[in-house]
Image (tube, rainbow, N blue to C red):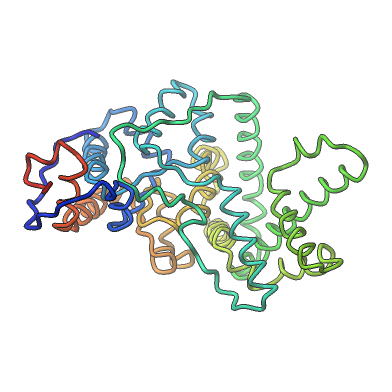
Length: 382
């Protein structure tokens, strides 16, 4: 807990029993879920610009008031591993802001979404994905914070390999820009291709792992791409239902269906890449050297957004990514109900923070007075 935010006095006096917990208070009030990308954390951590310090102070106030949660993600950890200077300090800072709250790893979220869509496909239910917060977040995210939180800190490993992998991925992206610029595809055709490629990668990862296991190479259980388990789970569903030959017929049919296309992580990733390709065709990123610098974090940004944005109330990204997310062809605010912010829209972001603060009810303030000693002297109830 930090900061001494003034809160409105509650007219309600309530005798609380020991059965009332910080967790139950959180269930009653629901926090806003705010995603801060690596760009935001890095600038705040460096502390060279007062607007970022002010933004963090206001976020901290809302964290103390139990009005927002700022969970960290596996993508934060992956990006921080590439942070050359003071990596451990930056990751500790991110986890302190998160106060013990975290998103599920991206592959878990993606796997859950695909499995749910597959079950709906088999049941011949509507293709529209039924999003649930539990897809991506533990229910404890809304529980009111204890005075202290414990972070699970992982030391960096394989950093040189990860940095080389990122360099190669960015280089491959930049080299592909020329082909995209010359493409005659429509945005809709690119959307279809993105979804097909996603399905192909999933199927190939599973097929390679299965072939290695059939040949007696049980190390495949350890070193296969983690996404191979996504298709494995679909195979297990078919096995439980005693459906034969599903991995050859039914699963490919599912991957070509509207059910798969409506999976949030697949849909949003396809929109982002297709809209990005459209901009490249229209003349963006013609200078390879400038593109290499501007796009150094692009793949991480897409992973952040495609995985977690549908479960957030607000998402702070760098200017380029925010602009892409606000493109009418991506349309995240309308379709996913998440507001997008960036450095170029700081006044809008500060307005959103103030709106969240002003939404605090008298009952919420009363609960703060019961749960936290620092607020009792401010007339917050007992």
